[in-house]
Image 1: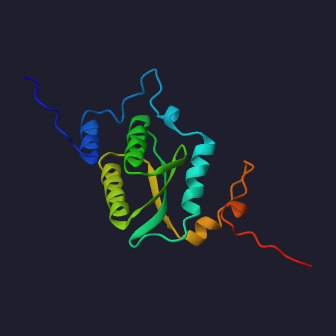
Image 2: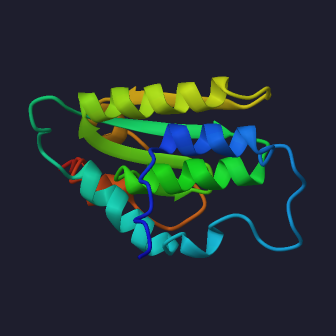
Image 3: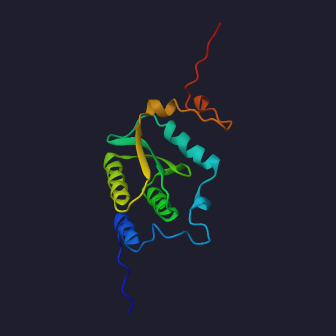
Length: 159
C-alpha cells in the first residue's frame, strides 16, 4: 500500500530545495516561470478595479503590494506560486496586490523573510501597505483605462 505524501509548508519546501542545491543550479532548457498562468491584462485590471471600488475594508483587513527582485528562476517561481495560493493578485510579473487580514500579511512577511534568509542571495522583497485613498489615487500609464471614472472620483464643474 502506498504511503500518503507528507504535506510540507512553503518555508520547509524552500529549505529543502536550498539544501538540495536547487536555488543555485542552472535553469534547465525549458520555461521555469509561470508566465503562462498570468491572467490577461483586462482580467488583472478588473480584479484591481474591484479592490479599488470597495467602499470599506473589513475590520483587520489591509491592502498591500508585494514586489520582488529574485535572481533564481526556481525560487522566483515558488514565491509566485506561494503568493497566488495565499490569495494575492498578480499585477505584473513581479508585483502582486493583496487584500487580506493582518495575520495573513504577517504570515506572508514571515515566510518570505525566512526563505530569503535561508540562502545567500542579492534578492529583495518589498511588502508595502497602502490605504484605500492611495489606491484610489493610483494612475495607470500605458493602457487606456480611466481609473478616475472607474472609482467615481471625477468632479464635474458647471460654469
